[in-house]
Image (tube, rainbow, N blue to C red):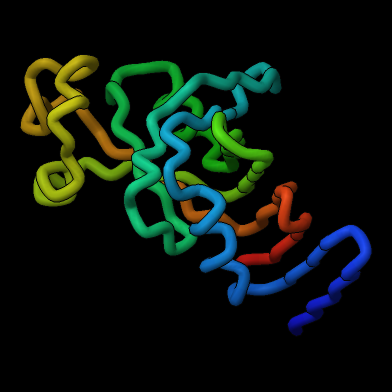
Length: 155
């Protein structure tokens, strides 16, 4: 079901459904760093900054490189529910995405998505067996921008 409402006085726009993906992608473009939160086995939430590679065309999924033997990957393997939050440095824009994470160890996927600047954190490159991709499939989004606010169910 799609419910699009618009209030012109304060430019608030609420869009519910997958048609919001292009709007969300526009807000995420050029935002390099997000916070990715996972749940620990004791129930506590842990967040850490991750490179978003905002230049990629977002299609409701995001990819992040991470050490396979790290706490974040262990937490995702236990509980794949995550939240990512984004804030633009150069404009009034915040985006929060909830979704499910999957650990991807496929060498071809790691090669395809590798960027040279990742060598700072992963000096052995994408062929390092300890380097994994975290694929985050967003199921819910909320955003606040100068052009309006929105909520979307992306399932």
